[in-house]
Amino acid sequence: MIEPYFDIEWIIEMIKEQEPDRVDLIDQLKKSERKKWIRQPYISFVSGERPNQPGSEWQIEENIVLEHEKEGTIVLDILKDGRIGGIEFINQIPNS
Image (cartoon, rainbow, N blue to C red; front, side, top):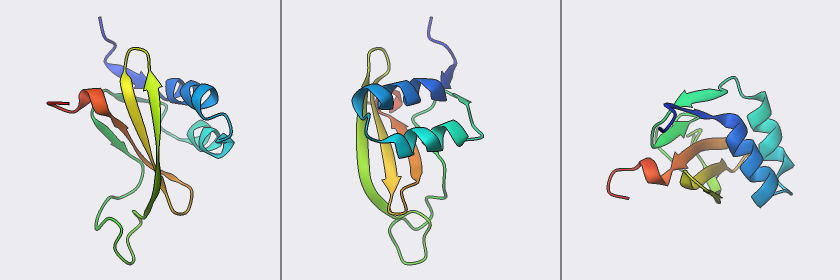
């Protein structure tokens, strides 16, 4: 049975294993007020309104791709200011 929630600690552990130099991301997630969330394709930490447009909070810099044994591919959207903008669970997207 698949659990209805996804725990932020799983993401932290994947970063430690797969991107150990990204201590900045681990620190951000540890400080996050959200520790668990209902399974869904995308979790947003900042407003995605008008992405990459002047004045928008959402200014993407890079994507970090993680692989989870059961959850599959997970993508972290990293913004230009270093914050995590969101987390995408590829296997949760319909038709993926």
